[in-house]
Image (cartoon, rainbow, N blue to C red; front, side, top):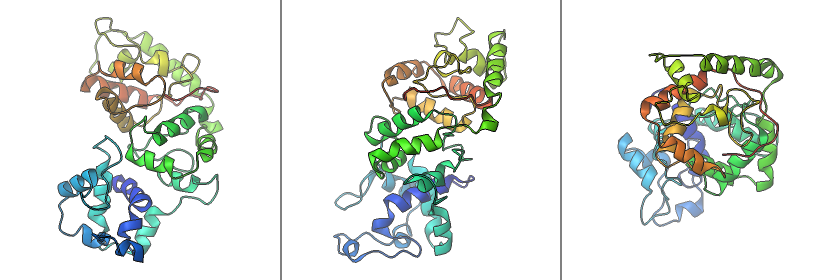
Length: 310
């Protein structure tokens, strides 16, 4: 929990979902909240006597016979950024807290500044736990937001975020994030195709996880009963299905997490989710690490027009 920007995600979720009851540095509780039975303690008092593992249990399970709910998702991994923030909040100065949770910009459609606080104004979060959005189509991102909103796709963070804005705002947000810059787009398709050609010509086993990931993505080892990832996800935007996400250039840590969730039956998604669940059930930890290493090493592709989310 001491690594990099891990706690920033937790801070933003806390401000959106938890501050209304527990207050925050520089933000006092309202009279209605203080009249609750039992009354939610101010956050500095609430975290005072608990160790991180105990805070993790409280965030995940909630507090029975009180107004505090459990985590709104089947994913246990998501509670730890919140815990990382809670271990820092006691004694935090109000100006520090405000800097952590403030909108990234006042421009864009309603809610964009808040979204950009995690995902970056240009869709590049710089955080391995938070995906790149600029490599996806607006259609894919809109469908993803809808599946978060109605619970088909699991994420406590994103279900709350997608439900906090009107449904008609989802499309403008998807359009704002779902585009590559011209500079990134130029030549990206050629670079991805070159990577695919290299994979198709590779032979023999390798200790290099990127090379092993290429062999898996292109199903070059016929002894393994694994599907060819590239047939749906690329590389090569000309071959990639428009109703599945682009993986080339996505963050390695995010890809590993998503593949584990697919394999363990905890991810969910759009109309083709069952197909991906079946494919991921055949992956072991080494397969997942290799595929994530491979796809994260590739140049982003120019998103194809149209498509829906997986």
